Length: 315
Image (cartoon, rainbow, N blue to C red):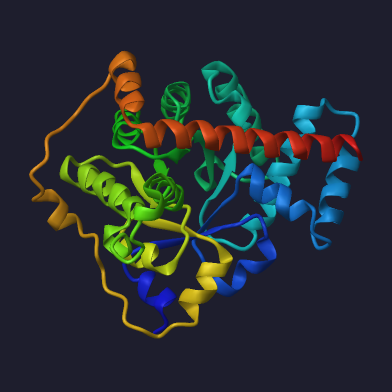
């Protein structure tokens, strides 16, 4: 088997793209999107007509609702190809507003429902701020499942588990980038590769914590820079992977072994943690990498959401 097929033996493979025409060749179970991926897709000739058609159909609607129609339209096309779920992201500019995040999630789910798609096939994607995690707590209680993204630290993961979040997306590549930049000329790429990659270590720590304490939240490693990071997390519940790296896995027949295992995690000598808002904010503040990457990620997604706004308004 090629490495993609080997990986599928113990990890659910998810495609990380808005380019749904690429999906079929990799046969992923789920797919994830974000504002940056959607913006990239709608500027391609293959997808520009879909954007124009959607905007024309809802041109008299409030702008925010047109944007949601575009996001859901991409989700609907993806769900024609994948048998599982699609993650659709709430506007990152709402990341610090719990009530507004819940309201936007309700609207997205209503749009999917109107198209005949039930909530079991949709994950509402929300940034892992304190407000985002609390919004997810409300939504999960209502039966609307969430994917908490921009997750860089164990304290974020613990709070998500306590909130009953269905799935989290800890970022590998962005953690790697931060430590590499911080180390500067002293960075040793070989010494920080594979299971020693700081991003891979972070996801493995979260996976171990969840399995040790029987937390049902699914762990989906995300934001990969290279195949070594993916191989180091083989066995994680899910991995969301770009089409480029999916193709690289598919083209290799080298053996791929499982590295994360729930039995080994249950034997880990770690203790349980719990947070209230004050202690959570303090823990996040103590983690410079997580604090900086969360803020940077929200700014980047918000900027791309604004660019998508401008593109739609121009039509």
